[in-house]
Length: 355
Image (cartoon, rainbow, N blue to C red):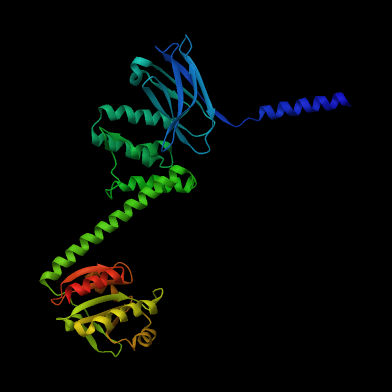
């Protein structure tokens, strides 16, 4: 009985010893590098770390091994100051062979299609035109946007300049294609999160630039023409923004459906009560389909309140490039747009300036 228990224990220990974490291997033959050290390195977004190394044998052969990554990631093999980028998906067996002194012409990679495509891009970047590089990288991205080769392609540079410029809305489509594919396949991957953040920040920056440009155009246009609005008030009478010319005007675009509408109107009322005698007027444009509810909400307001429903609002909102509710503008006594505001403190500062 004791001997049986001993045999069981030995077998159990042996089983545990065989259940090591999964690994991947990079091996091959490098001519002209005998007895030199070769390193396997992992490259994250912030650092490069050696994960294995060995001395190349006299016949040029080598073998490197490391723990398989949870998500596909970039590694490289390095001899001295020469390195080759590899894309590792899982427990792969990647073979890399070449002549050290003629790597571009002798390189042979098997076991990793993405690594082969990365090597092709790096080689082409040294000799190809920018247009040819854009064609090559676009083909790789479109063919498989969820691959590491596609990820590598969108960030590839030629002569220090990015092949694809994320700040250009057309180029950004390449980044978006990769980001979307990575999000669907590997939402928790740190590279997915980083790329998603970069794309969203780029989109936000573009929106801000467009808003600033539209605001500048609006100001320039209003210098020559009063951008008038005429809509029915809560009594059914047609009221025009230009009726208030000669006063400093808060032009308010809002809706009774916005969050904390009552508190929002209290802020407006404070400004109105404070500066109305000095020549401040308010023209509130409500974008609301529920006429009776709107009439009930605004009947006690002391300034001009008009309404447009969602079916007819587009032309009114386009006139002042309104992209969200609420939006506030300030017009001087000549009807020129002087600013667009998201907070009442900045608005009040400019009211004092133009009264």
